[in-house]
Length: 301
Image 1 (cartoon, rainbow, N blue to C red):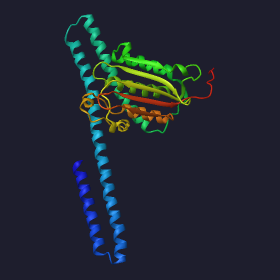
Image 2 (cartoon, rainbow, N blue to C red; image 1 turned 120 degrees about the vertical axis):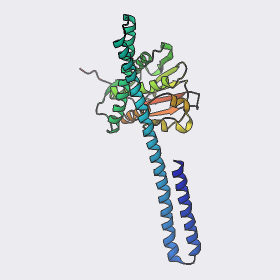
Image 3 (cartoon, rainbow, N blue to C red; image 1 turned 60 degrees about the horizontal axis):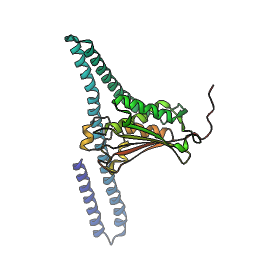
Image 4 (cartoon, one colour; image 1 turned 90 degrees about the vertical axis):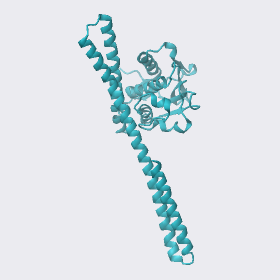
């Protein structure tokens, strides 16, 4: 990539030098000067734009390669593990306790495999449409409680590892309902919680806050005490396949699709997703903000 940048800078420099030389040689002749300056300006702009697009394409290809490598690992590891357990069960006589332990491990690997496949399929499905056709009232408090419970169970965490707090001032007067696809919102919040746990290298300590902002928005903020995010990457982490080029991050396997799905789902529901961090080693907060249903929800018969 640096070679392409250097080549673009050199070509731009040559074009600028030619433009200056043309002006110096023809500064008394109006017609060549009037024709030459716009021509060289277009040439310089074309070289600069071509270099920018080329660098972007190289970066995109690098992200795609990293994504393929990550997905290959995420698919191969559980398959290899399941294969090993099945071979052991086939070749050796094990007592009932060991067999149950092997079955539990195979089920866990199977769940991990299915989660990776579903995430890739979901990213392709969501990326091809502008918004979901399903629009039903969704109780965000109930959804948050379910996602927290499920994340604890999947990662074998204590109840204190992930805490959920709700803004007490908004419980009665301001119901926390949004209109949308409950499955997709479930996926978005699970991805945020999964990242918070994944990037907490030691013991997970995650705080989830559910609140109403300015009466019109329901906001869920997930704060962890993990490895943090450098300021330059806070917006890029929502790009498809993007992963922060940090040694600690690269050790943790992932597809680079989680936060892309979060922001895509949020925007298709009329909201947005944002990230905040004080820097590396200081944790991060990822927030999901969705428009609240302002009209009373009638009981469906």
